[in-house]
Image (cartoon, rainbow over all chains, first blue to last red; front, side, top):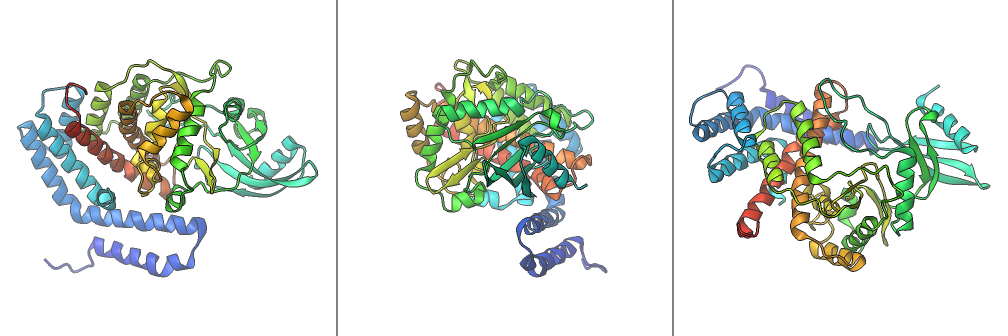
Length: 118
Length: 333
């Protein structure tokens, strides 16, 4: 599908490139650190826009499987959190597999390197 | 009058000395820190001012149960540590609330590196062993004269972090699983010692000879001494470095030095418990930072970025639990 206007992730990528290639080399100290943080945040938002929808669909599908009924993502998460807290009987292996997939997905957006560095 | 010149004037009055070159360093919103020089004993001395600022809680936010050691108590614990052979910055002055701006301390500047990322790139030899020795000495401090230290065992900590987490009403199955696991693995509260509470890479000044000073005694408490060893090994505090201890050493180096200095054996299971619990605590702290941005109480980009880091320690937590399940037979667990 083609868009008439530049897509949001592409805009963020352009801003990040500008900061990295043109702004960062002119800075040092505290401000350089802050701009590096800004670049990190831009990359997170970019990945969230790109990966988020698919991740949420997959998370919801796993929750439906685990809990045995349909529902909205937020409601299903609330239900699972409550079940874990109350010590409800859950298949431990399947639960852990779901939590691992959820934790991986969050890091795929927020810091993919964290998984590679291990 | 600018903020800094007001502080310089107050310092000058408190020290009864000329003050120059006051410059704000890091330290975040609750531990603002300045470097400056003062004319003491006939010469210009490099000094450090650190204040403890009480932050206002968010509406509905519950943070009050975390112990905090400030002002004269902060000075007392550091003096006790120095007597026990733990390097700390030599104290010059304690600032009480009457100096306006909250309690604080003035100490001599100690040369060295505090940034974790830089320390792991080129650590001095035997730094993990130096940590083991320092921790053994901290845990040997006599708590009797330090009546302000609060007992803070694992069960109490779990309740406090649970309460903070609940106050944000954010359903998070991974965090929820971590809370349940910690609750199911609580160690018995059978040995209480003086615990630093935040002993990690980033909270010490390091030079070529090892630890030049142990900093940030603000959450010192009475608790399980294994807590300090586990917290030092939380992956976040390795700053990308190779060794599991602070990013610069091995468990064996840390444990051997601790046992040699203390004459007590390290309970490895407990250290691992505190490392796992440490991941959960750091995740909740990241969440607190992020929520403060969300509600407009803190405006820095850095705080927002820390809020996004909560998934890192939770991911580490799952790794620790998975590895434990794979290696520890159920009847010993």
